[in-house]
Length: 506
Image (tube, rainbow, N blue to C red; front, side, top):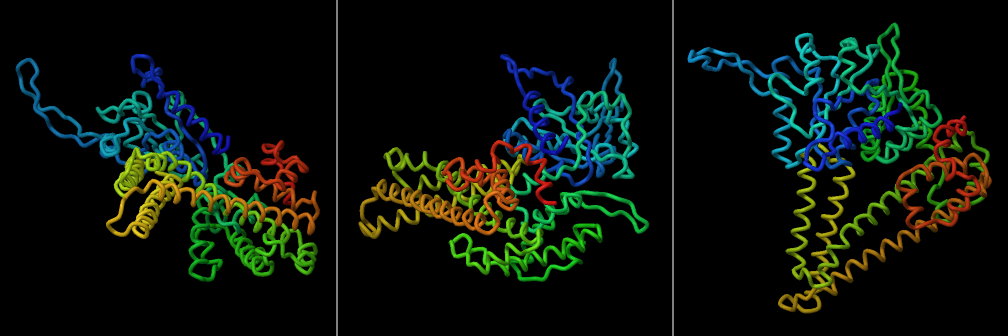
């Protein structure tokens, strides 16, 4: 299975393990809750999906890499304790609490979240002294004499032997105590995630045309060559920073993240072309309806790779703009209830109430961070709400003072309503502008490449499969998108297109 399917399966498993009966006991006893064992190559996103699952289920997450643990840190340190048996005193060995178990209790104490996932990575690379204890742990959820607290589901992960020399293959007795999921690198599944986190367009466009370069590990006479999903994502972050700082991207930089000389050379060359296309084509002219015949002629006469790169550039613009619009829309929906309390008079002091709401958002960030399930989307959402409350206070107080003076009345209901309606009006204006930009885009694409061209199909497919643009179409609509979506039947072929899109890119 791919990493997206594995995420859904693990999420379902955790949900079912945490179901309780009418007496508050877990439906599946802890001893019968088989740990999940996620077996897959390095860097395909095993660790990343765990924080996503924890965030979506609103439970905690404690992660450990077992390669860093000795028998003492995992099981606890021995100490001598005096005990009495049949009225005779004896010195008995006891053990301190395992560092791993202690971390779970610390997380519960700091976050207040009582249920969660204990994620143990590289579990099949444990030290020789610790390995015998793993069977007991997987069966009884015990490290030393200390048990994993109830309400904590164990998920483990490891690499196949061909990817890690330190791997110890589990025997049948051990495997029989696990739910084994074998995960393979799958570009379409990863691309959905990559689009959501806004990976650099050059990387996605390059991999669209060279899917075989997405992931690979091989042994050569000069050592190991490897390319991973983690490497592409880290490279994306660095490319964006280099561009912001106006620094030149070289093969040396790319090679720090992509350990394959052929791919490094080809991607660096493509990246230079990608930037050349950005300068060559006046992309903004397409969105404003100013495309001239010279522009259109150059695009028609361009190579396949150049036409696809241009299409990718255009799709990236829409994805980024719709992402920002949908985030703004979601924030306005979330704060609407709070605004209504101010406009109805249920809450009267704007400054004090906004302060409480700000503290609540800051607490959500803090609790999720301590619980280990804070995602970048969670943080961005709460930060956007905090910014809204800050602007609400500033604009409302300014309006009151200009109307009533510093010592004037503080009946701010009308000002709050005006502020919120102003934000709604700006959102509607942005939506209308975006729909108009899309009209120009589709008209230009039809004129340059044809209504049923591969380039048009690729554009509509990219926007259909992207979470933010798809949400925009579902919420606000776009007549031109619906026209070409129906013409090319993209909406009815979503799943098959995930598999077939590579054929467009030949």
